[in-house]
Amino acid sequence: MNIRHDAHVIGQGRRKVLMLHGWFGHARGWGPMVQHLDTDAFSYAFMDYRGYGHRKGSGGPYTIEQIAHDALALADQLGWERFALVGHSMGGSAIQYVLAEAPQRVQALVGITPVPAGGVPFDPEGWAFFSAAAQDPAVRRAIIDLTTGRRLTGTWLDAMVRSSLAHSDVEAFAAYLTAWAETAFVERIQGRTVPVLVIPGEHDPALGEATCRATWLQHYPQARLEVMANAGHYPMDETPIALVTAMERFLREAMAA
Picture (tube, rainbow, N blue to C red):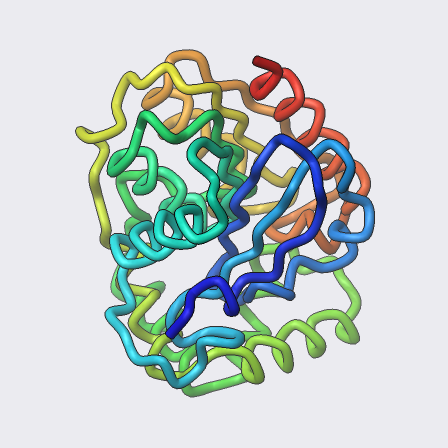
């Protein structure tokens, strides 16, 4: 399969950015933020993972390592020698794996409510709950509601669930839970001085400010943290303009050279 055809590429700017989505996302599932991107200063490539979006039915492997290798292959096909990466949630783990595999190519990282390089620990009850999401749409809805602080309209929650069901294979969705929760490679990225911005949501109970400070800011000595006010786990939907402003302000500085 030609990976390039599975990416949504916008912009003509000299700053190149790979966008890696979350567990409930897909390449065209980044919400209203996309319409506010500066496509003169940046070029953005939104990639689908195996089993998601235009790659539904592709088969695995459904691993963080494979996402990283596919991202590097996409960059090669686009002719991008150096680039930044933005990762949401599960994509936060994947962008770090790209850094571990090809540090000389990565100009900057932006983690949006991101999974850290050590994975995410679950107790048995939490694991059973999240594992049920692959087969049960009601559980998917409950997880989205929980991770946004139980404060958003059910209309949006229902739309997110429909999008997740339509744009992911059940087999892939199930396997990626293990991938993002259990893939740990802190020793491969610990102490790297690449510019890093971490954006937790104010209302995210799991991957919020405290978790990011205990992981990302310990792993990257020069990392910055900017809490996204009035957002939970999905600031690209909840606070799209504020998110783009923070992200592009950082990337302009990090990619100025």
